[in-house]
Length: 69
Image 1 (spheres, rainbow, N blue to C red):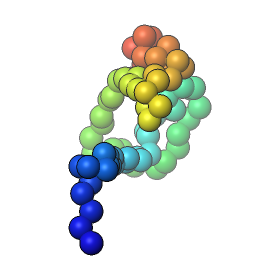
Image 2: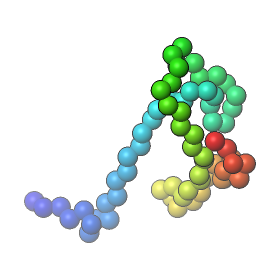
Image 3: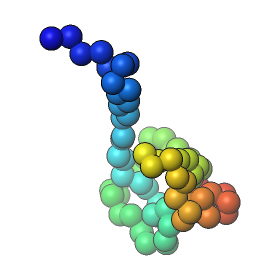
Image 4: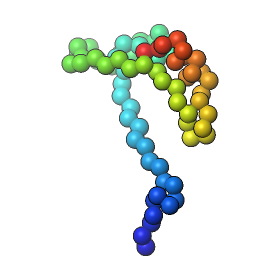
């Protein structure tokens, strides 16, 4: 049996989790992962987008307005 995913409207995404170095996103709690110095550092800005329901989370949108990293 051949499944036509386009006809079904099938959508698939990839979610990646990584330990953060420094502090947590919405609080100043420490994130003690390792005593080693990191090879690289990456900063990302919070960007609120619509989820599965089509709505944007108001808390995420509020933090985005504050230009949270």
